[in-house]
Length: 241
Image (cartoon, rainbow, N blue to C red; front, side):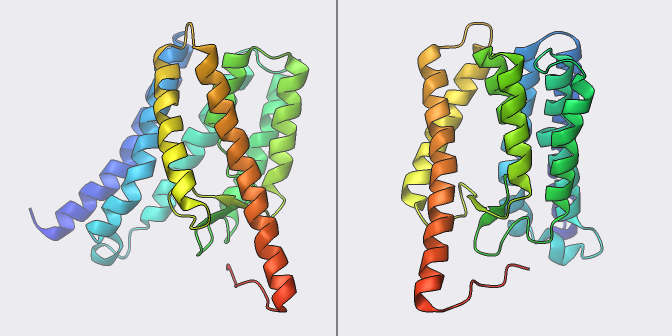
């Protein structure tokens, strides 16, 4: 096969994330939460590996008229936003008028995805990065009251509009030596939790929540620290557009 064929295969690999998302939705509608979150985990693995593959195969260079990043954004919105929101609305996690509440993260995430600076040149996300698949999993696992679930969703939806820099676990340089091993360990724990969805280990759930807390606190700390450095030095933050 020639180089252009390999480039198309890279785009096809990205598109496989969409198939995984549709299988996740089908599994959910068939009543299998474990399979549903399992397919969403597969979609996440694809999303974590398709970018390096596309760059290695020079997909954008060999097929310049096809926008692989746009395809990736479409797949990500479906898998990280639309399907998890449907799972929360249909799964009894939200109060009455669940479709109205579910529209809030769907619309706020649509705004976040359309920001030109949603991903910065220095390896951050701008605003809460719409990890609704992770949110949905923990809400299912924790069995919280509807009012608490709603509060979590509303707070995170609001954070999408606030231009705080959030860590991209494998790209952000500050705290990288700590973040990468913690992310890998957390990912392994999540796979175990998904596989044991019917009776998840409470200790693993708590450890997963600790990682989520680390992610948010570390993101806020880096954001505030960088802002303080710019103010002290009299320099202006780099242009992220």
